[in-house]
Amino acid sequence: MSDDLFSVRGKTALVTGGSRGIGAMIARGFVADGARVFIAARKAAELETTAAELNDLGGGSASAIVADLSSEDGARALADAVGAQTDHLDVLVNNAGATWGAPLEDHDQASWDRVLNLNVAGVFHVTKFCLPLLRAAGSAEEPARVINIGSIDGIQVPIMETYSYSSSKAAVHQLTRHLAKQLAPAITVNAVAPGPFESKMMAATLESFGEQIAEQAPLKRIGRPDDMAGVARFLASRAGAYVTGAIIPVDGGLATVG
Image (cartoon, rainbow, N blue to C red; front, side):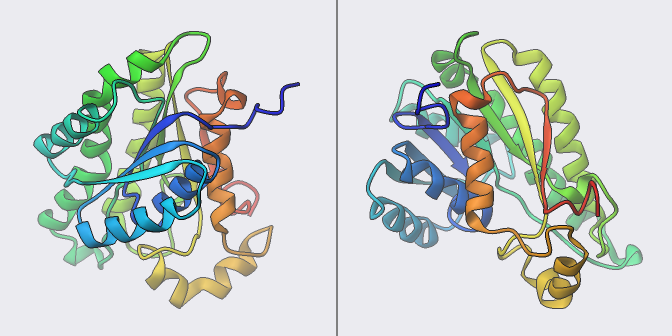
């Protein structure tokens, strides 16, 4: 068995929401193994800081692209910007997302639309506009990869009143399966469903319930950056070439055996 089975060295990847949190964990894992990675997010200063940190790792490289993926035009602009710098894309990680929590009576249309537009429509449109780059890289023998970031909140009922968020992540999981069927065999499409990881999005939940969540998890801890980098590298590497349409919980067992 070749020692490059789990390698992404030499691959070109785009990670949306790549300036912090889970996106930055994945981008770091790719760059550390020698991939060329584009990271996209709305805030230029955060992006540039993260790109500089990733480039200090050695191995691969990171480039920052400012993008707002809450609209179809923003998704098209991101794909165009990536296409101006590369003629192919081996890996697309759809990680950009938003959450919102409020009592049911206060969950208004604006907050619902903000979450669904980015978390679901954004995933769909970015994938759609990146298809020419993905198809240029993929084949039945060595497919290009799309990795969507869902959530265990799309599998089980969450603790907090995050109605639009949990609904959006369940939709991402179904969209993943639908795209996997449509884009095979030259492109695989899978979803990672994270549990609790240290991130800005999870900060309030972990502050209020972190110890309780860790205690309830069969593995008795919160996720680490290498847990997320590891599953993403598996799906992006030759080791994951025969996996498509899967929803993989990375949650210490919370959603499956907790």
